[in-house]
Amino acid sequence: MKIDDKLLKKSLDAAIEHSTIKKEGFKDKIRKFDESIDLIMNLKDINLKDPKQRIDKEIILPNNIITKDRPSICVIASDEILLEAKNLGLETMDKDGLIKLNNEEKKYKKKFVKKYNFFVVEDKMMPNVARYLARFLGPLGKMPKPFPSGYGIISNPNDLNVAIERYLKVIRIQLKKQPLIQVKVGKKSMDKDKIFENMKAIVEYIADQMPHKYNNIKSIFLKTTMGHPIKIDEQFLKGIEV
Image (tube, rainbow, N blue to C red):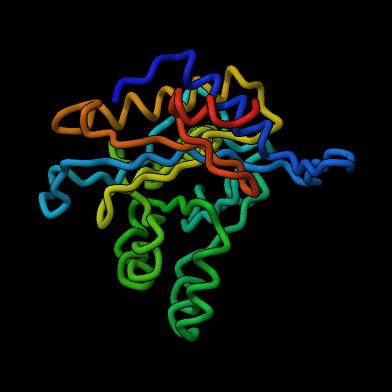
């Protein structure tokens, strides 16, 4: 399923347009928060029992997908990296805090893990993180990964600054149990060209990972947080008002 640029852009316009609440006789209602825009890909003819056809990776998009100053990050570290994280105003945890967290109830640990978008961990702290938090981080795809699969394991303070800049553009792609991928490509407030560049980068990346490239893509949708799914398909677009 090869998709041209014009169709991608047209579908993006439709997704944004249809995120506005319209009712005949009433003024159009625009939601008061900056909605995210998700790209949803349904795949076909793949065998997820084969580890080679699964994906669990962080990739860097061409443009930021986080519009605030920085993503929600927890830094688990010691010494210089811990100090640098505190100086940057990031939330931190040291070895003692990690041990204390391990003694908390299961529901508290789940709540803690859900609180952050990303976890950045000093390399020498990873054995403890794996020991105490892996079963909570893993199912959410938040387990820090070393390069090239991810950017969450660091060894010095300079790596921390690089990681923060990267995480403004990083998305997690997981393809494990179902032939479905849903990832954030930006916010409604972003320049459309930048959202489009992110969309195209994801589609091309996924196609490149598939055994039969674009032929493994069954369908693609775009959806704002509260909007209706828009199928990236000429016939679908003809049936709606854009």
